[in-house]
Image 1: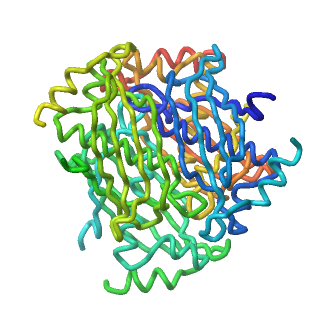
Image 2: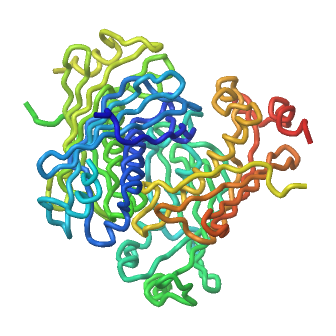
Image 3: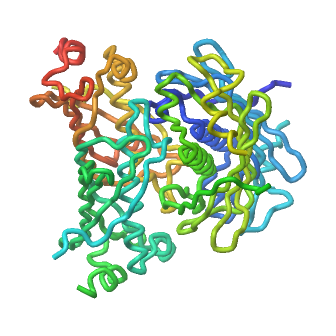
Length: 134
Length: 134
Length: 134
Length: 134
């Protein structure tokens, strides 16, 4: 089994760096969100269209381990693996600096689906497209 | 006539500073937006409720003159004056550093109202509450 | 012993909300960062001055549990407790909605000090001011 | 003479959209900044290295006309032309939606160089690399 199912290359934008001269911690959360949404799109799932149908995929818990800071001009790749754990969709997402494949950040993101404010036991819209082909 | 109708005090948050050690330019736009929305709230107008009714107040043009950069720990005040100019609501917004009343940024923000995607000639919801008492 | 040592009141800014109409997850990280830095300032420690001396307090790990989403116009308070755990300064930070004291998010932030890129066993600058008075 | 000297393709990230479901105005400023810095890099000029030498290129004035809002999933291109006007480096930057080449935003960004806090009459570091080849 492949360790990752999807990856997205990005590059640090200078406005993402803070006065320490490194990417501000919150931006890693942005990076992982953007990577998840692009992964979902590739699977035919649009985060904004889901929202328009009343279904919101929301983060219940995030843990990020910060290993090596990204800096101005760094290119990096965000790699992703998805697992189903009960009612949760768990994304394992690791960010590597491209120049030397150094692991910069390791995230685990537990998400759940909410329909008009109510927690969903299962989200058939997601399951069909995310787990069908395995 | 008073030069300003409203003011909002804020303080620089460190994550708003970039690698130059000063508040990133785009954040001044955030400051002016937050100040406009708080001003509207004080007048009984909620930006998010307007949106839920299909009315969006949108920025058509913004000009910001950057005079003196804000830095970590600076407290500042955003002052605002509103004028009606044809179909436009024009906000004049100046940001002053509190410690010495130094003018840090001067913005002019032209906004218009859009109803379900169509430009509105006038927005009665806004006019009644914004210009009635004068 | 008080459960919290410090608290900071804030209010949601509309630009912090995303297309789901709720505060974007990454902004909770901004809220906790701003609260930590204000707490440190109250103790006489400036994050940006530390940086200028070559000392950077950096986040090694963050975990955030998202309970109830904050929305446009919500006022909230970020409460904080600090513990020392080996070389780590661990911040327990909870965000409550002010209108009903509902717990919105619960964060644990493990930070360490880095001097010119090297992990510090202890940071006397911080210890003296953070733990002296207890 | 070509109308633009440089262009950079990007894609909307969902966290850049606000509760109106469109890209928040301040993010266009981020887009233009990132485009300028990438343009400078292509010319051999690093914004962060300049800063480390004590030279800061800062925005003195920005004007943005918002024409058509960008939305979730939109791809766009930021095109740029640079002109020298006295001590100012003026960037003309237009953002087009890729799907239909619709003009979404038009920006004019006046920048100046500051050396250790003092306005520079000219910045030889920039001039040599930006205007040499024309």
